[in-house]
Each structure stands twice: as structure tokens, then as C-alpha cells.
Image (cartoon, rainbow, N blue to C red):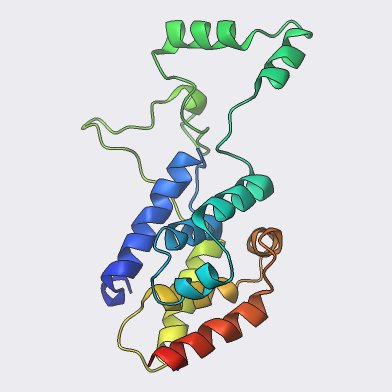
Length: 200
């Protein structure tokens, strides 16, 4: 299916992985795909979101609010933990002393044989960053993008199709992000389709 993606759509899929990394998530979800799309505000379909006032910054804030990530503990949090005898600087120093610099910088990996995943560097032997898997909801949205392209009789899958696939998502995480952005997916979908018809 990936061979049918336009260059912009490919950049969005690759960008989703970078968004997940930046948020320190161990998966690529629909929220990461949305953030990658928002990085190109004039792209087909995405321009509708831009016109509706959805920016990359607003998108990131909504994703962090709904799913966490991105922001480290603040000074108030650090002080609150100190009242319980937990010194985060000392925890980090000891972890790095025992497991190497940056040991706490990667998200916890799950799965068999990864018992000490929180201390893994997240890099392969050749220095490349490790693979982040797509969550089932993101896979479903990408599959829906193919269906959108077929329904519109388009020969390739573009950013507009990915956005339309995201707007058809019915999982709680995706809906919560849209709600946080003040978007009603069905109404936005109709606006995207209208904008695409007008541009044709």
C-alpha cells in the first residue's frame, strides 16, 4: 500500500514516527499522524484544518493534554516528590551511573526479553534509532485512507486521504483529540470534501 502514497503522504507517515519519538511514546497512533499532517498546513485536506484554526501548536497541545508526553515534570512536581523523600536529580544520577548516560531518556518498551527496557538506549548496534510500531488505530486510519482514495477514484493516496481516514476513526483517543481541538469529525470531513471539490 505504501507504494501508492504520494510524497507528501509518505512524509506524513515518516513524520508520525518522529512525532511519537518527540513525545516519547512507544507507539505511533492517529494523534502522531495528525501532528505530522499539521506540519504541512497548505497540503491538500490539511489546508481545511488550517482554515479552521488548527495549527501544529494547537494539535500538539491537544495530543499532550489527551495522551500525555512531551512535557517533563515541572518544578512544583519535583518539589512535591521531594516531600516524599524522592530526589529526581539523584535518581537520574544513579541510573546513569549504573546504566549509562541517558538511560532514562527512552520510553519503556514492552514485550518479552525487555526486562530492563526503561534503561535501554533505544538505538540499534549501528546507531540508528529503533523501530516504533503503529498502533492498531493508526493502521486502521491508514487503511481507511486507501478506501478514501478508491472511493474518490484517485490513483494515489495523498495527505487529503490520510486526513479523511483520520476523520473516520472512531476510537476514543482520536475522538478525544478532535474534541480537544473543537472539531466535529463529520462536519470537518464534509468541509474537507467540499474544499477538495472546489480545488478540482
